[in-house]
Amino acid sequence: MGEFAETARDHMRDILAERMPRFDWESEHRIQRTPVDVVGLTDDHFVAVELEWRRADPVNNTAKLFYYVDEGELETYDRTSVFQVFTGYYDLASGGVSSKREVAEFVGSVAAESFEHVSFLPVTFGLEPPKRGGE
Image 1 (cartoon, rainbow, N blue to C red):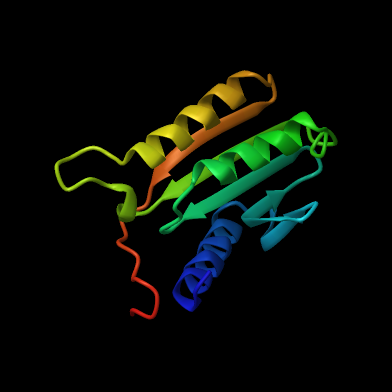
Image 2: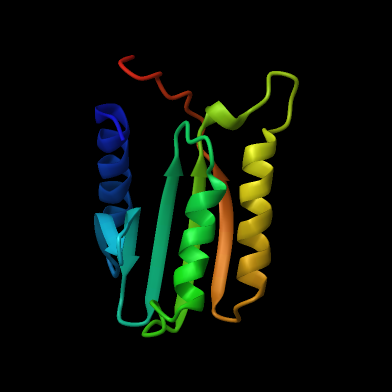
């Protein structure tokens, strides 16, 4: 993750902390070896926010989170909410979104339907991220 993405991630964490103060918000929360961009925690609710800037395989983030749900890594929480935030990088010039985003959303939706206490929501973030080294 580049400096711009880290700054945006931390800004998102701070905004969420202001707007949803009952959660403890942190960046780069680890579930086993996997970092989650932004996480909000209460005694009974786990919120994961994955920021997809220019990732070639955004489905990997979705699949890993639900893998950990299935493995019982988050069983101490009554509720798990997963938000996958996509930048304009995944938008097509002709309209619609890339197949990479579509597949990630499909996997997230199917996985969430498999667990009673889990929800998944894809989010469009109206930002075109800079390329590596860009401002």
